[in-house]
Length: 202
Image 1 (tube, one colour):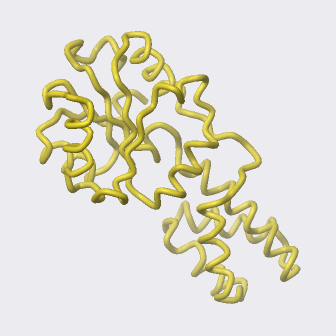
Image 2 (cartoon, helix red, strand yellow):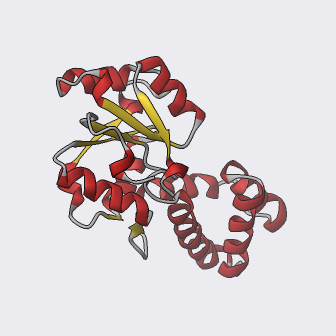
């Protein structure tokens, strides 16, 4: 699917951030790398071993189990959990986060057509902002309007969408959401706006 396949009457496009505009693992894996370096410095546990375990846990079990497996298999002290949480919010990444190429193309086409781009994202606002700041936007950052739903009410609640519509004097029929999660689909349906799964573009 391409921009030209979307109803040209749409005036505004809403995106989630993680796994819609860029792969979330690109952020997480760099944080794991930084955390492993910290652990190696303080505990002398080999950083590569720690990084490999974190990445493998993420792939096989999910990000919520990453620190627990560190505790179990490498005997990492519980006190380091807060270090990982802090790093997740504040990390200065070695490499910029790169948008999916097809999403970069889509965003560029939207800007050329003078339509609006919104990022409406769930999660810790400080962490989400940290990701946005470290993404390579190719000059598109000046066209982004961001709503952190945790400062309003997290999706699938519609408060952020309702606020966005009011703030920018939009009609619901003018908007489409690009989503990759049940939470976003429920939010879009409850808001009365159209949605397209990101895999249609990828």
